[in-house]
Image 1: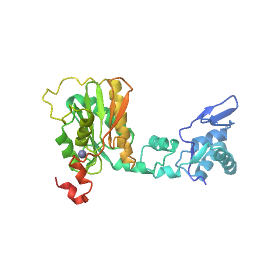
Image 2 (image 1 turned 120 degrees about the vertical axis):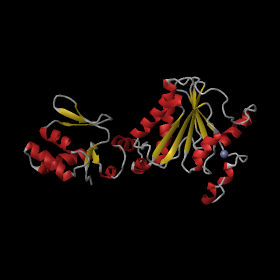
Image 3 (image 1 turned 135 degrees about the vertical axis):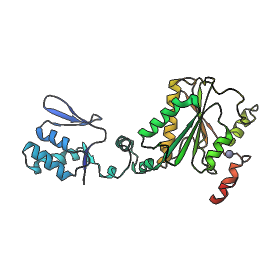
Image 4 (image 1 turned 90 degrees about the horizontal axis):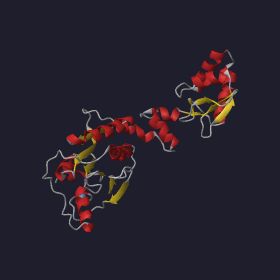
Length: 298
Ligand SMILES: [Zn+2]
């Protein structure tokens, strides 16, 4: 039963030919044009219930509400109208909810986004990428208001991030996603949840197995204002990958950077993933077997 009728997700009413209209286009439903049809489509907004929508359309066209109901039932039967009732309970931007429905996902978990505070920490020359990430997350319904207690940190740095800084952020308990810009590339990840996912030191140890000259990360001795060489196209893709992981975490899905680092650039559109497993030589591995209260000590 359709309680709160709405046009099929993402579809619109358009003209098909001289006497017929179309709802949607993939493939869509073609139906005879009439004042009642137009009034009914205008009345079904996904909020009003079916009875009110039919009454409004009938009143606007001076017809019997039962006739409007017959037309509504035909639109429902043909798939042009669906029930928006399940979506109304989701606290998320409407287009995000519709996008989830179109992708075949349950939009229910999106309600967690409004409760998630995102904090983006960016070096002075990375503020453009920081802005892109915050905008994308905000469109998705994640709050980045500064007074909120952050529940996800994104740390954007020029060059490899300082390991102690990232560890200090992670020690507070919220997930941390490091993003490093250098030599025209953005390296994203790993997604760090202390004691639950591999960390940056695990990444150093993993790299040293194939890059024998890699002795782990050391703080930069260089001046911080040299160009990182990340152009707008690479930055846009990096922001998209970061936002996708932030939204995944908010929705209870697994971020792609759990146990992995993604690299995009220097060629626009390129992206590659490298696994980051737990390394038995990294102290974070020990935290996985300790009870939660013990993870605050180290
Ligand atoms: Zn580790």
